[in-house]
Image (tube, rainbow, N blue to C red; front, side):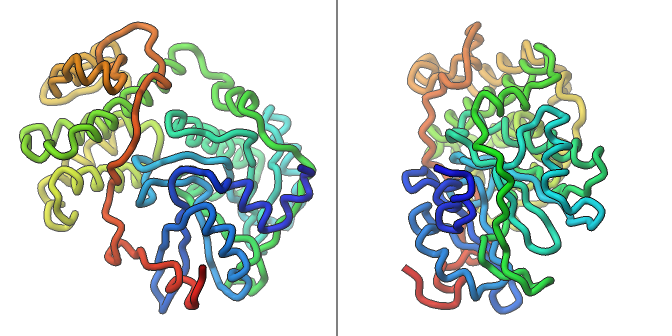
Amino acid sequence: MQQDEFCNSDVFLKAVHPADSKGGVVLEGPVKKRINKSVVSAKQLARLVKHVCIQKDIVFTPSRFYGNTLLLNFAGTNALFSSIAIDRRFFDIQLINSCLAAANIPGATLVLNTGVQYHLIWILDEEIPQSEFYKIYFFQSKLFYILKESGFSPDPSSLEIVSKVPVPGSINSVTNQHVSLVPTFSSLMTKKALDSVVFSGVDAIEQRRITSHARVLQELLALFDSRVLMISSRPDLFDDWIFFIGCSLRLFCSEKQLEKELSAVVIALEGLNWEKCKEKYVGLIKGIASGTDDLKIKYKNQHFNLSTWANFIYGRLSVTEEEIDRLGLYYLAGEEGATIVDVKQVVTHKYGFVTDDDGFIPVSELFMRNVS
């Protein structure tokens, strides 16, 4: 496929969200002065593009999710991005790519231009699967700091896995112009190039810290998912679940996003709306989110480092040998050489309610017309 073919909106959306992708794409836009969201499949998204040309401020997630837009629900992605304000002193996209090249980062595949922001898009030659979610935040964090140091104005919101970009062809209400696709003459990003950027300048100890946190999180979610029908019978472990998941998550999202993630865990544990149990957990959640030291973890008057952290979870949650074998919880079991791809997780639990209260509505209402 030629690079300039991606400047066709239909081809672009199919490259970002292939038809056989797992999970859903979240669309967002204003309806009657309220921001609403809809979840659609990759196939539906491709069919919707023809309805976008009369819609204002419609955005979508480059990542896919099993339900609400949470890192906990991440299913996979075929694209990475960074958003920057258009500065007339630095309006040349090739200049942006040159700055990135100086930092050994491949140029963006193409750019979405809203008239006020450039959204640099890297389309990948293969999907980042659920188990490699951590690469997204670290790649987009590096983009943010390199662009900022180079004199550009990157948008901090584009650091998050859950962030959104405008749908090409939609109308930006600030400029009243259609969002356009601009070629950069750069190719798809390879997995090898992505890994090189993510771990560039990161020593072995830091790499282990990153992958250990990711591994613990994946195993915790696999365990949570397998116990979801019985978990409510152990309220004495609710704080433990929140603490363990939160400490594993906080390397991979902002403090604000982490609070959203953990409120969804509370909802899953309590089976209640967040407002009904907020007071009980807000102190614990804010304490986890504001924590800064990931090498030394303090919980219930005990201190842990990464070498004992997994063992503590293993004992506290009473992980069984049967669960270890069935779910692939080898890291929690303390097995040397366990890798993140060993987790035998198939996510069925969806964190956070997807209801009208969350702003989710049928896509026909979002587009204010019948769509198929």
